[in-house]
Image (cartoon, rainbow, N blue to C red; front, side, top):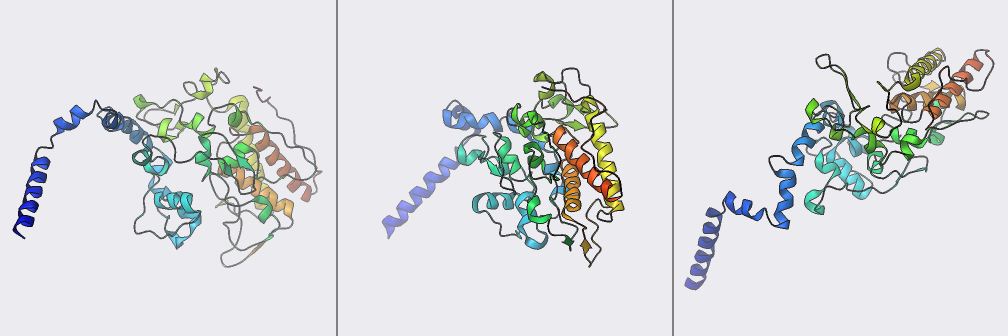
Length: 363
């Protein structure tokens, strides 16, 4: 027993000496080693994390509005994309076990696992199946589209003409569908064109544009991990990465001064407003909420699947929020065919999508 006691005392004394002797100097000297040297790339005084964190704080991912409701109802639809724990669990298992004891925003370790993988690569860049079965495969952008896609397939719901909830539709932030030019409602008899260069010619699609030209000197407001293409401020004026970012560097729009190139966004805004009015007049869209016009505790009957498809297209284009940038020709044709069909119900002749008053630039 005495020998065991002495052995324990020796081990404890040695451990205390080692802890007392563990100075910063030892770590600094070890910085030269391959194992610890890489840590300072991120964790040093000039490390990558400082800039990335500064950019992230200006992102929608970091905002309180983005995480306030992640445990609501414990369902997977919200939690798998609005909560760090929910996303990782969904990525690993395909389901979530919310509610969680705490709620955390999407942050560094949601996308990266440097302490497990030994690098800053994304957790996965595997191609993603959209809800209609089409495959989205654009490099690092694949990671984004795990969440940035419609939560339903258009073909699954356009024949469900009795709505019991105003949450019918694609949901929000379905940029993956629009970049792919898929999972929208195409009315029979119309031709639908696509402008896919932003997905196919720009490396990593979403990431190639939204993370381009991080502006540390502008307070981390655009590019990088802010993912912002434009920062609007009364104090500093609008900050954009149009010219210094991928748009200018790719040689596509070197002379552009804003994102309304060839008035494309102006046209899209006009068509969205026109379709909004027609859908409200048809009684299927709530003018104030911009959601399906389902009364509380009641139901909404949609006249036919083309009207349901026009409502879906409106919600898709609104939720995409690029107002033409992601896939201008497709967005144009979706809106105009939907407008034409709704006008036909009012006695106007059904026509093919109208020509632009300003030409679209070709690349």
